[in-house]
Length: 547
Image (tube, rainbow, N blue to C red; front, top):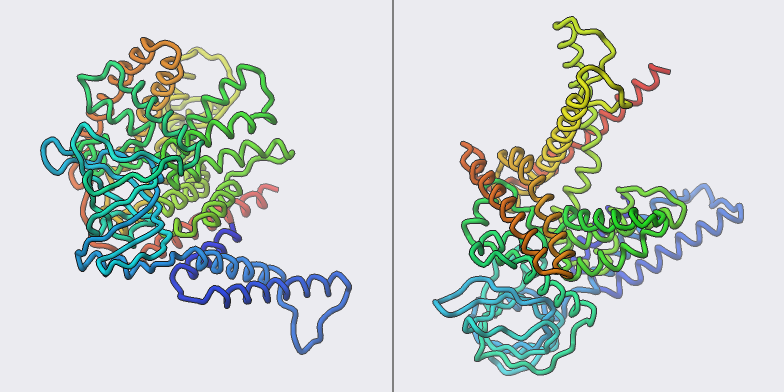
């Protein structure tokens, strides 16, 4: 985790501080040379003179990490500065851009009746503004393409020339510094196809076929079909405005982001099959890797999905090397891999929210869960003294070996339900504690109703995704089975929408707030860190007393 923080700090400096790349390269070389020199001298048993004290090895190591990250980030800065793009957007002049479409175009609304708007990204290679001069660029530019409803824009992997106007984009992502190119059917000219990855092209084709299977039998229920496709495949453009506002108001829109929940369910299904085939856990990695990578690529390779995929691959590959899986180590490796490949993702809101929430869940959940167990244990003890019940009967919350008593299986079922509700409630509370300041800072919303919303929405989302996966697996063999599972999902989606609508009516559940200052966000996380540190110190003190 320390390496990740150092690398993130260096990446932030590289993206924000205008330092020359050659200067950073020289700095990295000098730091590495210094670290190697000290390591060599200490190995030889030579201590430097008393006049110049030897710095600790970990300081030199982290300085090397910071400098390297800064160098990589500055090297990835685009050739055409963002300020020039914004100036062109403000001037309103027509431009021409040549680039390759790098994702699957998705419908994003319509301008007029009979006209559809499509949204996608292009990797721009050449750019020409009103003065007629061509400039070589290397930027990822969002595009909005208008055309008749029966026609589609060029597909993934097509090198295309676009003419249009630049507008300021409200997109909150790593492309936020670049304007939106607005064009249409008469102003785009496909040049050549096949410029994309063959693997990604096949994954996109599988995604489209999966979307067709998930909509079988739901022609009369387009809203439910759109929610199912958004939850499983990341087609968020299929959500209508009313549905989107409903989940935004309850603070549960995050379930539509392909993230750890979706990747985890896919991994669970694959592991269930591997376990049924009696395949050792040591060999799970080779089976999980291609399937999870294909699913991540097919759903758009968002930062949250990439993070979850890398975490799962690292965690389940640990037995291959004779090691025990560690969540924080897997999370740190995922962050390093993403930032090394794409330093601009550090400015992406999805990246920040995804890694912050997952880190908070890993660190906070054991603390809050243990405190809640202690509270329940004390409450049950008080209740027993009041009711004069015999001591020794464990609380619902605690694990115990199976013992038969007069209350029989009903007690065991009640205990399981209580433990499940308690675990989901703790997860929801921890996720809200971590995400609340970031939601207020980025989206200017405060949603305490999300505590209740996640408690109901997350289990229903799990069931919808699981049922959708069964529809895809069985529907690939028999289409009628896909319709059966889709109608089962229709009932679950209806329940999900009604529960969300009921929660959204809670008074003061969602409030628009002014953007808080940055220092309050850091103060919030500092308080959570102190709480975790105090709890761990208290646990160590209790262990010493018991000994």
